[in-house]
Amino acid sequence: MDVVSDAISAVRIGRPSSNRVRVSGSWCARLAPYDGAGFHVMVEGGCWLLPDGGAPVLLGAGDVVLLPHGTGHVTADSPVDAVAVERAVPFDRWLEGGGPGVRPAGGAGEAEGEAEVEGEAEVEMLCGKYRLDRSRVHPLMAELPTVVHLPHRVGSHPELRAAIDLLGRELDAQRPGSCVAVPSLLDLLLVYMIRSWMTEGTTGAWPAVLGDPVAAAALRALHSDPAAPWSNDRLAAAAGVSRPTLARRFSTLVGRPPMAYLTWWRLTFAAALLRDTSDSLATVARRVGYGSPYALSHAFNREFGTTPGRYRAERGGVGSGGAVSA
Image (cartoon, rainbow, N blue to C red):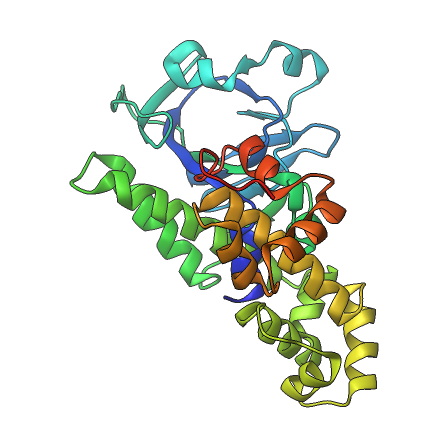
């Protein structure tokens, strides 16, 4: 696994949901804060997006916007004031046709619907949500801004555009296999949105980390085999630099020394395995580089303030009914 893949996998839970919506006339819809991430893709026309506590964003045809922290927001046909925000139709009711001008155009995932089209739509967009477990967010995900706006530019982000096109086609009609295809395309869309943000010339810390040959090589080594018996010397050799050089570059860019990051990632990875798999504690310990279930339990309790078994039960893990008592 690479850092971006691991950062997403550590927080992704459940199934994403999406809807294709056509709307015309005057409209204003409100999406409450959400324990996950939301996105909008403008297929046709344009609209305004007003995030809670933020500046309005004008979205045009082909634009993509990701709200990675589940920020509440309003979408509307025109700039809105405080009064309009207060009167905005809740998004779920709006999708069901409870708002002026809305025409649901099919859906998938958690909110499926039949196509309902009347006349030519002025605005068409894909809207969706991802469920995220924010208890152990990787700093790369935490660093994402409140709104990631990716304006449409001809020739830019071809993978993202291809994923959007495929998703739109799947949502146009219920095709054989769509129940598998749509969630997979939504996961792919999330990866491409984050990747596109990283290549947009952003000044964030983690694009700089992954653009640095020393830090990036060390992170690739740690993430590709977190269970290996890593040491500063062995990691420096894998990165092709001296130990002092690795310590200086890694600590400066990542914000913690290499072995401290490794410990944090091993425990974060262990938490994801407890949540998403039925692996025994002994198996989880081996996969993340701890010599025994006791050693993992001790470190896990120190980091999370709870035992692996309780953590699994509280998160509704796949193996929460099994015997993981340490």
